[in-house]
Image (cartoon, rainbow, N blue to C red; front, side, top):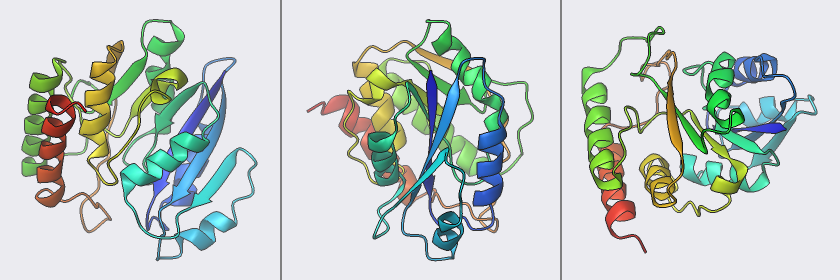
Length: 233
């Protein structure tokens, strides 16, 4: 059994090596191996040079020739991942790879096809940050739940884990952060068995490198919720 960790990366020179160290050192259940697929989305801050020096054979680095967005990077990563199970891991340090075991358990037990790591359905630590980001997340999750007929608590979470056969059935079209509502709508249409587990969260401020925009990306996410749930074709 192999877990593929797909890491979309853009201008993360201050965190990428620490992130890879944590991913490679994260505890996994007995019998589960790992590979890491990093997709550099045309970083311009020196991240590409850092990645070129990574020698661990468990890590494969792919490069985009122009910046396309997180969704495009994940599309490249999923296509090149070889694992039986695939998980998304942002290149910053907001999410803790030590919690892969939590995400894996419902899949390895044969109960789940997809597992979301919820930042809100948890007793673990969570950094307190922006009120309007929180409210925007709750609104988008609410709208997604109405149209997909699911009861997720955190649709926008980075930590999404899939059985290989699920991700192979889905064509990702969104290039930026619209990936989150798009993939959620499409797994709902496939009638996947979806579980949530609580995770910790160490969010970043904009000064620390946070990239998602509450207006531009928020309105796009709302459109994607409607587009992929209502206009199914």
